[in-house]
Each structure stands twice: as structure tokens, then as C-alpha cells.
Length: 88
Image 1: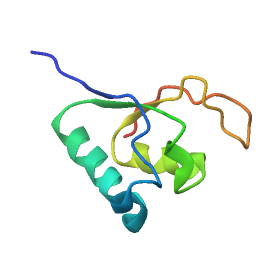
Image 2 (image 1 turned 30 degrees about the vertical axis):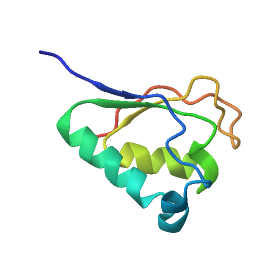
Image 3 (image 1 turned 90 degrees about the vertical axis):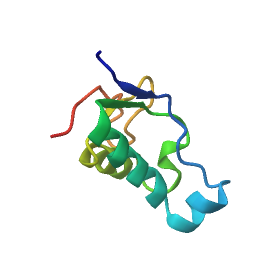
Image 4 (image 1 turned 180 degrees about the vertical axis):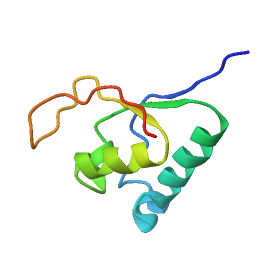
């Protein structure tokens, strides 16, 4: 049976004590574990850049094997929206 894991953003949040103490390490570990189990797609939310700049966050999420969908979230350096891409 086909399966995909879809995450609708806002996975990082500075208001979360564990996330704040770990600098998002738990979230990145979760992404990697999920990507090993099934194709995983993250829709960026407004909390994703709370620990790092958006480009660095997206690069780290992709490095974990997760595809990133950006909706209307824009890359501040280029002004363009993030597009769905699959990391290899």
C-alpha cells in the first residue's frame, strides 16, 4: 500500500523548551527517522526559520531526506517562493 508522510509546518518553535535547548536537533532527527520509513514532505510554516535562516533550515531538512514545499514562504535572499524538491 503506498504511503507518504506529510507534515504541515510549524515543527520548530522557540516557545518549546526542548526545541529551544536543542536548537531544533530533535526536529531534525525526527525528519531523518521519518524519511527512512517513507517519502516525507514538509510544508514550511512560519516557525521553521526560528533557529536558523530559512535557507539553512531548508538545506538541513533536505539533507535529512525530506522534500520541502514552501507555499507562499519566500527566500529572503532571492524573494522567490520555495518549491517542492526531493533531496538525494
